[in-house]
Structures are given as structure tokens and as C-alpha cells.
Length: 88
Image (cartoon, rainbow, N blue to C red; front, side, top):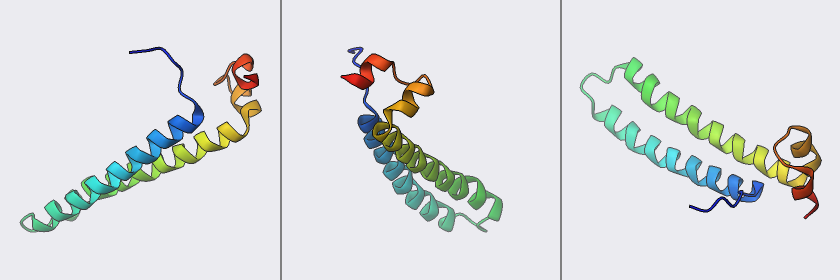
């Protein structure tokens, strides 16, 4: 595996992909929970609610990565990007 650093654009794309995967899994979980005997609301909250929150968090992280790509001075200030990288 190479040690090439990922750009914020690549990070954002990977996060968007992960968010889509979480949403796909959410649909599958909804089906499983709907078929569960008695459909316990706690089971629904634990599975669907948490998966939905994870997808939302990944989508928000993608937006943050895109914002950092547009504003490298913020990334430098946060220590996420060395100054030399921002200039290249």
C-alpha cells in the first residue's frame, strides 16, 4: 500500500460512497426489522435509527472535506494540511 496522502476531494468522495452504503444497509435493516416477530420499537431504534445517524454523519463529513478542499487555509490552521501541500 502506498503512502500517498489523500486529497480532501478523494476523502469527500469516499465518505459519500460510505454514506450511500449505509443508506443501502438501512433499507435492508428496515426490511429485517419489519419481518421481526412483534417488531420491538427498541430494535427499530437501535438498528434503523443508529444506521441513519451514521449515514448522516458520513454525509456531513463529506461536506466538511469539500469545504476544507475549497479553503486550504482552514485545513492548514487545523493542522490537517502542511503549508507546502496547499501551495502545490
